[in-house]
Amino acid sequence: MSKPHYTIAVSGLNNIDSPGPGMPVIRALKEAESFTTRIIGLSYDSFEPGLYMNEWVDYTYQLPFPSAGQEILMNRLRQIQNIEKIDVLIPNFDAELFSFIRLSNRLDKELGIKTILPEEQAFEERHKANLSAWGQKHNIQVPPGTMIHSIYEIPAVAAQYGYPLVIKGKYYEAGIAYSYDQAVNWFHKISAKWGLPIILQKFVTGTEVNITALGDGNGQMIGAVPMRKQVITDKGKAWAGVTLEDEKMMDFARHLFKETRWKGPCELEMIRTKEGALYLIELNPRFPAWVYLAVGSGQNHPEALVNMAMGNTVKPMDTYDIGKMFIRYSWDMIVNMKDFEQISVHGEAGKNKKEN
Image (cartoon, rainbow, N blue to C red):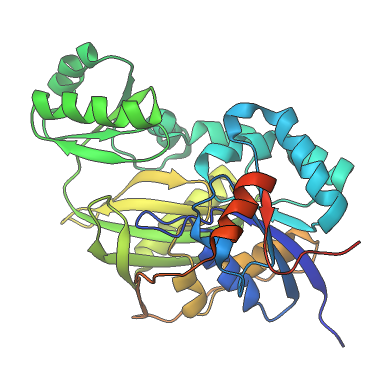
């Protein structure tokens, strides 16, 4: 019996020092055992490396920035769909997710594009600014945090939480401030890049551990693999990591999915204190850039997501290989200037354009 063939669109092709999840997700999809794929890359910047990785990405189209609005995005996707007949779309940027969540029903009904995304309420509740209240609601241990819009609010929060303070952007980036001056510097640096508000979070001492996971939206955890970072970049990104045998982390994840009924992929960033307590410091609402470690450990989460989207039976994945490591590396690609011009001028590029 032949395998089904799906056309799958994937964003997040910025495979740089702060990598997006797109290329690891595509790698996982290319290695899926239950189907074959044509991969459509969705880009926002002509310098995203995935645009030029033709052995992985069949063809790429540029999308309007999220700030352009949902109708402009919908119109662009309609143009692309008229050519490509996309079956499943997997967005991988935090900043674009709200638009795709809002459009998910229309994408399905009007264009026939399937997605597996969290409900809008769940997505909004787990924002960094709302995480403390979200944790209390679902009985999930979260360090207290406060959202601010001005540096003049820092002293009051510092008096409550003490130093050091964790300073976080709305979407990305974080720093640790050991004084008021450092907090002000982090506030200006992060807000200039990602805007307001800024989140001040109580610092919890311990070891950072992470889980990449997938939920079905009905309280079931489809798969989960825990990891500890072994090498961390100056941006706080894992450059190497190892899978862990940790039933307490797995129980934490099962409880989270049961309580929140989270639908789709996520990354749980946690701190384990020396006493063994686990604190959730972030819930990222998409696959992490290290998701291929789960594939290498025996759980192909992107493959499971596509099968869920297509209505195929997906059994929970309960086992994974312990002690598997990933080590990230840099690789210089040589590309033709005409390929760069093609995506910059025409908004599409690739070696395998679909012919109607």
